[in-house]
Image (cartoon, rainbow, N blue to C red; front, side, top):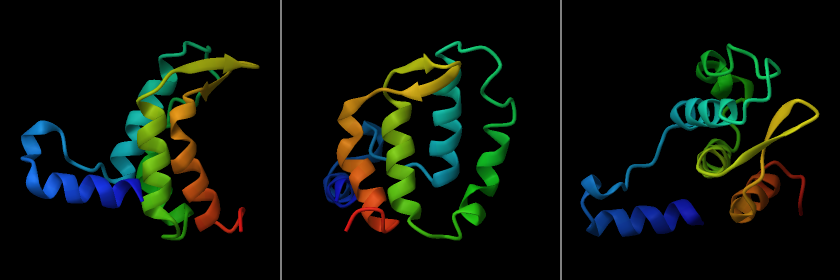
Length: 108
């Protein structure tokens, strides 16, 4: 739903105002870079962002828009270390997470 609203807004607002929607791969790279900012040590694989090019295949082209929205939203928030692993703690991504869970059949 968020993506549809942003698309309609961006249809009337120039792209120079930040209305581009990232691809899955771009959102993944941004997420990896943001996760590194938590400085949790070496628990985040160095190849995190290099694995982004394979993510679409791993997801079997399922729920791509929803997964992109979650990663894009989380990358814009804060991370903290939990047991040495960077975890996104931005609660403003709840709608995106619910959309992904519904798409994947976790919530019905």
